[in-house]
Image (cartoon, rainbow, N blue to C red; front, side, top):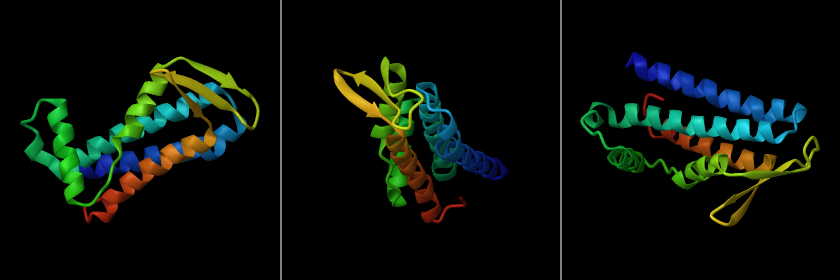
Length: 151
């Protein structure tokens, strides 16, 4: 039980760190490296959320499962039973964008934009898009809170 509280505390700290990057650090550092750092932080936030949700919602029931796909299935079912909607497509998109090549538009400018190509499709990543990614992560973590868990 104490370990669950520690995981939740770490997740909240990480969310605060992402907010600081989005609202403070990015205003003073307008580079693609900063955009990528925020994207990496959001991916890490999703991974911490998955770990916390699995620990809290699935718990010991999931310890016998070795296959990652089965763990994701168990976690998804547990979240759906509690009414928590998590869209994994953004998580996987962020991971793919981080691994892809990118171009920069307007580095050191207010309208900084990173252009990435995944499977021949062009993705424009700017601060507004990062705010949207963060909002969906925050709503997922808030969904745990609404599901009457110890979160």
